[in-house]
Length: 118
Image (tube, rainbow, N blue to C red; front, top):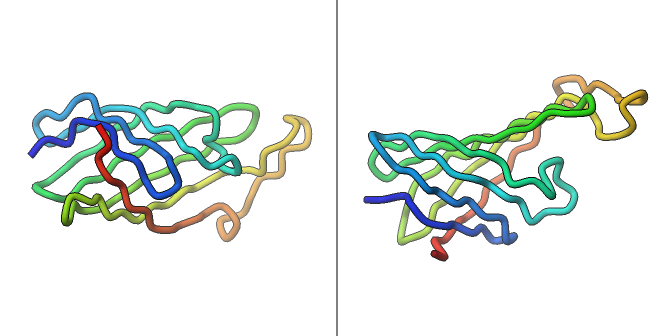
């Protein structure tokens, strides 16, 4: 199977996979969620796959804020069912007023479903 293509989740965020070779994938991720630290950025995504299971990750840093996200899931009935984790080091804000977050407030998790759209 090939993972190459554009995948969209229920919120409109897109994963575009442009390379799929030897169990590795490369592409980009762009979130549609305005309240995400990743909003407005098209981020390099890299990952691995084994048969019908896949994992990919992306992240960014700047102005005191570092955030990284990892999706893990499997393909069932042409849908990529995933769970994800985001870890963020600080609240967004002016660089002089960055509030570093403790572990309990740094982690978010949820589940998304992607469908291939192209």
